[in-house]
Image (tube, rainbow, N blue to C red; front, side, top):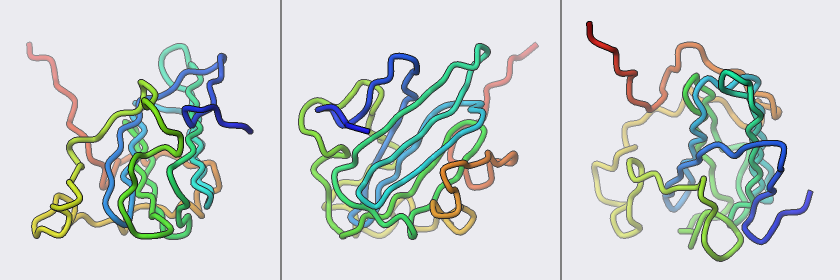
Length: 170
């Protein structure tokens, strides 16, 4: 499938989920924010192509995205956790180093793609002790290679990073 100049395929029959991202020199943190996604399918290719599709909402609308990442990735070392609120990916870069941007294409990023300021660390602050993810345990996450493009959500959302729902009072 061909990518347009913005690094993604625009399918008129589907919508794009919101995606937030941050990076370190060795990996990309990519979160697809789509609560109650049903039948999520996620695929990552070594050339840096990321695919996601799922249905969500009361009308079961189709959400799809195909991104052409800035550079090659290590699929075997990358991790994924499909939860009820979002799909959190830790994508290992093939070569260590800071990317200029997330997508290969230059120019303004698409509107659905945003920086994840909760996970963001500046390049010169990466080696500072006390990084937000120094103590985070990624062992509970699945390998992309085991997802086979058809991930099932975890019912307990173990290890997921999200805010709890606000409950209505009285």
